[in-house]
Length: 94
Image (tube, rainbow, N blue to C red; front, side):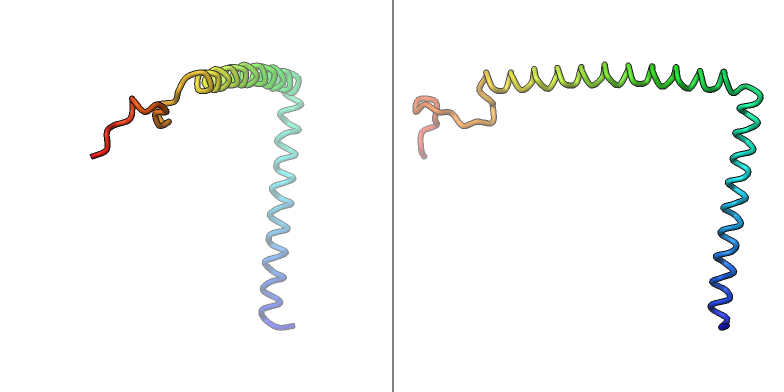
């Protein structure tokens, strides 16, 4: 086995070991939280999620209304960016 292969296998093993350690630590932490106050934590997360959905829905509705209103205003009135259409409003050539 060459030195490079040994080093790459060593790093691969170290990354796997660190991943397992992190995963086991996360599972232990979540298990202790669930045991101590899991029910209240889950209920709080569900309530927060429902309130977040309601807020997003209301914001989306307001933005849709604003967009529709702006689009209607643009379609019904002449835009200041459009060039004048009648001859009287055009400036005389120099």
